[in-house]
Image (cartoon, one colour):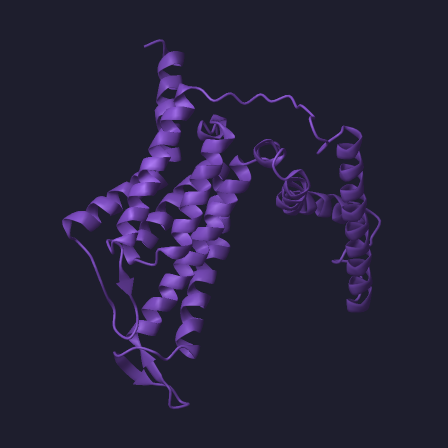
Amino acid sequence: MRDSFSAYHPVVNFLYFTLVLLFSMFFMHPVCLGISLLCAFIYSVYLNGKKALSFNLKYMLPMLAVTALVNPAFNHEGGTILTYLRGGNPLTLESIVYGIAAAVMLITVICWFSCYNAVMTSDKFVYLFGRVIPALSLILSMALRFVPRFRAQFKVVSDAQKCVGRDISNGSILQRAKHGVRILSIMVTWALENAIETADSMRSRGYGLPGRTAFSIYRFDRRDKSALLFLLFCGGYILAGATLGGLYYRYFPTMKGVWLELYPVSLYLCYLALGSAPVVINIKEDRKWKAIRSGT
């Protein structure tokens, strides 16, 4: 599916993901967590389709359950005691709710990072930081794209080994282990060689040299300016509201925080507008394309 938000200037894309990731990690208010999770889930499904939906249901939901259950087993703070465990430690309502909140925060950050990897390609990252920190930007760009490339290459190597009967699904347990070690050795060698080839290729092109110019297809137009102003307004308003206590919420010793007062509600709505911005942009663009195709 066509993602119109990816066509915006890299500054806009990077600022957006910086804001949503930082807000998701530091704002533990239940309403903020719910808004961020909903927006991240919808956008990840929009970007990756059924694959993202399947991944979220198969892996994210079990992770949510495990993380939510593990916290009360080790964290016994809180004033509302529900019962006592066999070891004599109390099971508190606050520890359960905090475990759920921490699990939601973890899953939300993972979803946002999946969207980041789909939108912020390596060329955008190098464009933003190549002149400021050329060596570090190249390393980070290689690291961010390493995981998807490693997975794709691993499938290629595994299929090739399976054709000659040396896959991890063939033979006894000892033979499977040997096959797995062989595939791992192949992948490590491939990763090191690929990194060396990339570094040599960039060096031969004069990457990082003083005064070096580079071609760029990115242009900062009116649309990007409007989007940047919107992000700065939302981010600044939310940060100011959080500083003034508009998103205050605590879990220990008892749960307490602001809820449906006028100022906090305005912060919730602004946070929702920020998180849903890419999806709203895509929906508007999809409607325009449909109208153009239908000739109406």
